[in-house]
Image 1 (cartoon, helix red, strand yellow):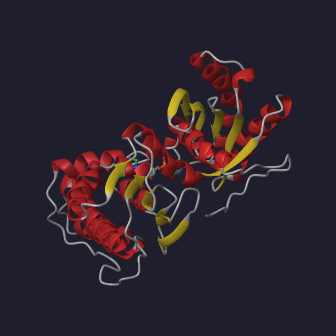
Image 2 (cartoon, helix red, strand yellow):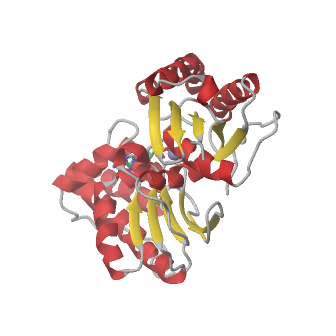
Length: 335
Ligand code: KG4
Ligand code: ZN
C-alpha cells in the first residue's frame, strides 16, 4: 500500500502554518510563522492584521514545506485545511490557498475542524485506541470530546463562558503581562504559593460543564482591592493561586468525565495542553484509571500548527471526507 502524503494548512488565528504529514503520523515538514509580535501591543489578535500576515506568508511556507520534505506537488495524496472555527478573514487565506493548490494539481480537498486537528495531534505520539476521551483546552475552547470510534466526535462538556486559555490571557492582561499570557503565568505559578482564595465554579455539579468568567473577575477584584489598600499582591503568588483554581476544576471535571465515559485513551490537547501543572496533575490523576492510556499532545505541537491538521486530515481522508470547490471559511463551526 502506498503512503498517504498530505499537505496541510492552518490559518485560523495568529499562526500561519503549512505542513506535510505522512500517513497521519509522521511529520515530513512543518513551517510556522507566528504573528504574536504584531498583535502584542494591542493585547490580542487584530483580525485585519492577521489576514494580511497570512497572505504574506502562506505561499512562502508552502514552498518551504515542499523543499524541507524534499517533495514536489506530484508526491501529494491530498490537501487538508482548517475551515473553522476562527477569524473569517484569517481562515479564508488558508482555505483559498488549499483550494487553489488542490484544484491546480487535481488533488482531493479535505476539510478539517480546528479542534479535530488539536486532538488528532495525539497520533504523533502513538496510534489512538478507541473509545477515546479528549480534554480540549485552548484560547477559544474548553471542552470534553468523546470519540466512541475513529472520526466520531461528540462534545460531552463545554464552557458556559470563557475558555480556559482566554481566562489566562485576560488575567495576564490585568497583571500587565504580554499576550498570550498562558506560558508566563504557568512559569510564575511554579515560583509562587497559592495563598489567595479564589472560586472554583461548578465543581459539585456532575454535568461536565465549565465556567471561568467568575474566576477571572475574582482575580481582577482581588487585585483592585489590594491596590486600593496600597498592599500590592505578590504576582507569583497570584499566578499560583489562579492556576491552582484552574487545575482544581480541570482535574475534578476530568475525573468525573472519565467515570462517565470510560475510555482506552485520554488525550490532552490544545494550546493550554502545554501547561506544566496540568500535565503533571493529569498524569497523577490517570493513575486511578489504570485501563486508560494518557496521551498528552507534545508541548511543541500543542499550540496551533498545520501538522495537527495533517493528522486530522489523514483520518478524515481515510473516512472518505471530501470538500467541493465551494468550500468556505466557517468562523463559527463546531463539532
Ligand atoms: O490552541 P491555541 O494555540 O490557539 C487556540 O486555538 O486558541 O491556544 C492558545 C492559548 C492561549 O490562550 C495561551 O495563553 C494558552 O493557549 N497557553 C497556555 C500555555 N501555553 C499556551 N495556557 C496555560 N499554560 C500554558 N503553558
Ligand atoms: Zn488552537
